[in-house]
Length: 324
Image 1 (cartoon, rainbow, N blue to C red):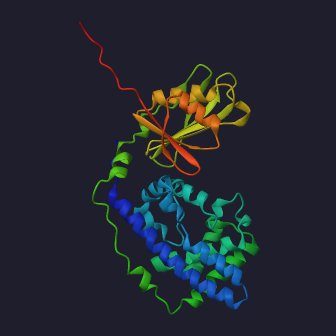
Image 2: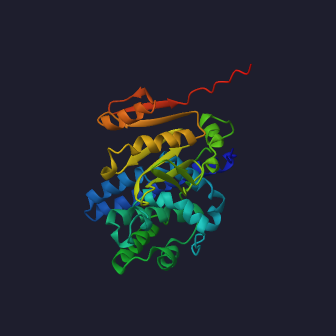
Image 3: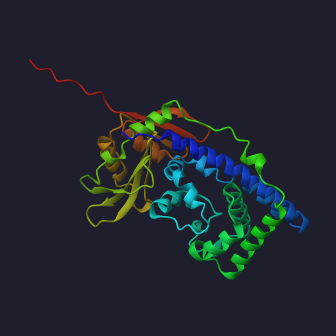
């Protein structure tokens, strides 16, 4: 059982809410500038981006928990010359992967669109206001340390940041920095209990069946466990299985390997190995093959929506043997 640090969760929520408010304020300034430059469409799209900025931190449990784990490092990370540690990079990896306003989202930072750069400028500007740092100095230093843009992308980002500094020189952002009611997680709810009860470390590195073996992957958090499925015969990767702390499973057998019974073989062994007494899988209504497979394993439908059905599996109760 893992102990959840609710103080860190509170800090992460509060930081996210304040940051999103600051980004929206910066976005309004930059959108006003774009309108004056006859770029109204870009202004509308930027406001749309800012309105959902960093929403993945709230919607994605793994991402949120990973970022909460480094929230106490935020003061050092606000240093304009800060080089992230390995732990900080690993914690941020999911966030970067889910948000195109970060250079790390792309294989090359120069694949960022102009809209990405506009949102990135608002993001960096908001952080500079939160931590009272020099935005332009930050961009110049991080260009060499982290961003590595080509001349065109770097010039655009620097231009947008310079514009924001000029437009907001008389705004101290106090309205959004000092007007947030802190959220404190003092009571244990069902989510906290599930997180504490989920012990990823009890899952072995390998699970073997007659024809397959499942190899455990590293996950960026302690809220899920994931396995890659291989053929024992020639070590060919054929799919994956993952399980989240909330008891929901996801799996996939790649198309070329369907119809060989691998789904049943892999899932039945994984379910047997799992320490959870009940499991859930969400299935699209237009996927009869997946429904057939999990029904064969004993999953029963328990929740319906317009497009999906949630199936529930409960392990049979253990019976005590009669001793004469």
